[in-house]
Image 1 (cartoon, rainbow, N blue to C red):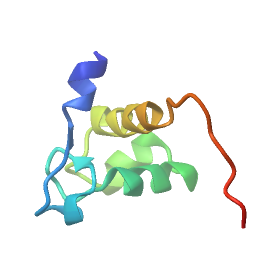
Image 2 (image 1 turned 180 degrees about the vertical axis):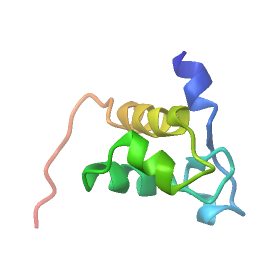
Image 3 (image 1 turned 60 degrees about the horizontal axis):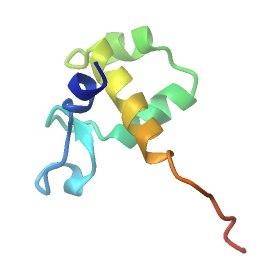
Length: 78
């Protein structure tokens, strides 16, 4: 299931400046995450963006999860 979801995330230098996006559409993963973090539900996002599917949102979450799987995180001095 994870592999199938991650196949929805595409990287193309001609789309969204090469940022990870959903199925080659102009929806960067970060945009989906911003919508979710603002409090929108998956159902609300799908209702507002007709070309997105539930699995697209789940793929964005899984992709973000994969990115955070690191051994250590260090605070950068500010």
